[in-house]
Amino acid sequence: MSSYPPSVPPQTTPQTTPLRQRLADLRGPAVPPRPLDARALAALAANPGCGRRALLDGAGVDKTALATALGSPSAFGQSQFAIVRGNSFEAKVKGDGGAELLRLVHEHLGAGAEPPGAAALVPDLTAAGPQGRAARTALALREATSAGAWTLLDHPMLALEVAGSPAYLEPDAVVVHPDGRWTVVEIKSFPMIDGGADPAKVGAAARQAAVYVLALENTAGKLPGAAVGHEVLLVCPKDFSNLPTAAPVDVRRERSVTRRQLERLTRVEELAALLPEDLCFDPARPAEELDRAVSAVPAAYAPECLAACELAFHCRQRARAADEVGALGRSLRAELGGLGTVGEALAAAAGAGPAEDPTAAALRQAARLRAEALALAPARTPSEDSACPC
Image 1 (cartoon, rainbow, N blue to C red):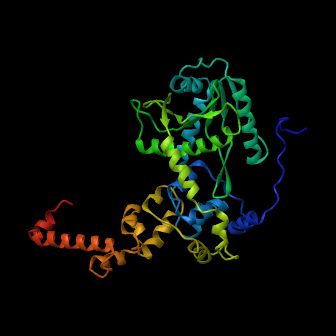
Image 2 (cartoon, rainbow, N blue to C red):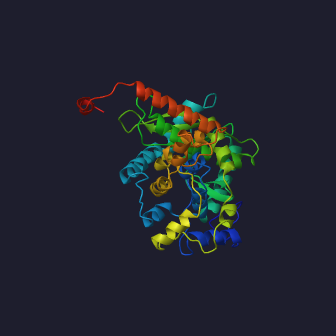
């Protein structure tokens, strides 16, 4: 007997397309694809000019294994302790059929609605493969919206097209309100002390939730009466306890920025078409071959990549070796315009740049002001230098 609901057809194995085969060849025929998640998509949207990350993520390449094979392993990612603590807190929040979680949603985002009583919990969204799970989630959302009651979907599967390739995303939970509104719930293990949390961590959670909101909007657009709320609910431990507390987070700005950046991404097939046919990122290959393969794909390294990409240490090493100004920061790279290396910028400051170039003129003026400031500064004695606390 089929395990699919009557209204959900079984998922058949898709035909192998030239693009699918090309991506399989890029990551290695025997290497399974690494699926994209919301954290990776948020990082990808933050640096849409990096064709290297767009191609590797689109092909499902394991960047952690690739970085290790290149000799530049990265410590990027959560510790095992943080993962265990997060899973434990999430289980506590969703305990008792999700009653406490639904209470928090109603308290912060359920104004005007009846309190959740015997709410429906949809914990079983299993199906064959991510496509099947996404179809099962869409069915559950449609049924919950039609029912007009509080419904909690535990770890639904959402689909979003990124650079021409499908990405399947799994939020912690989605709550369907009686009025047909859908709310994304993000459960994090960092504390919320006196009603506030670390702004950097809240911002990262908001960018991640914005990806889920975009994916949900694709599904909601096909269902009459459904709407996705622009506020997500962030659930964290209260103060220094393990008790859950929550706060609504408006993600309209993050959603707009993420959508715009994802639309700017070069499609994977366009990037793959520019590469040699024998190019491969299989971590089992020699490091020299992998280095040539990675170097064949243009990157846009910036210091912010260190907190978001597994290949950041490798790209930083190459950017410094090439004297790229991007290694000093995105803002500096933008201000210098066509001056792509530190050497070119220093040469322009010394007067070697074209006279009509405004960037070169600004650098010459800055160098002149610096020289004047140093000439006016009193000379320091060796004893003063040794006493300097800096």
